Length: 97
Image 1 (cartoon, rainbow, N blue to C red):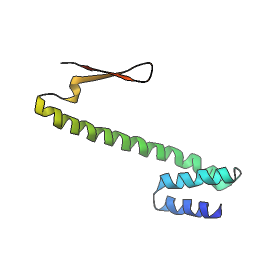
Image 2: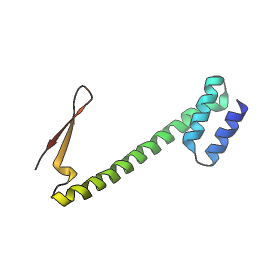
Image 3: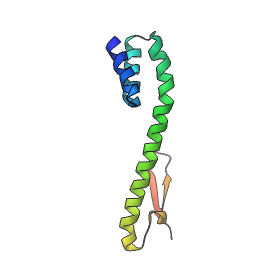
Image 4: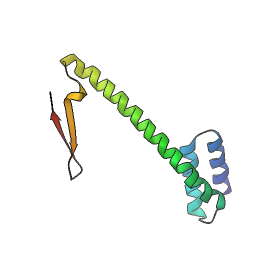
């Protein structure tokens, strides 16, 4: 437990918050009453979530740029396609001009 908390603190100082959060959560599994882990998990979770959301948006933007560069050779763009989510969890993709 001590090693996990030390590693989590080191990861946090190195700004590896995802790894730090994982270690703090593991420490909570081993000792649910640990005050440091109980304080750090709610503190780090929103920051990690925000970073993941930002990374997801950047990745989707890059993928859209790549798709537009390929479709541009055919006079098309990803803006020509519309995705509608189906109730079952799938997607319906339709072409619009």
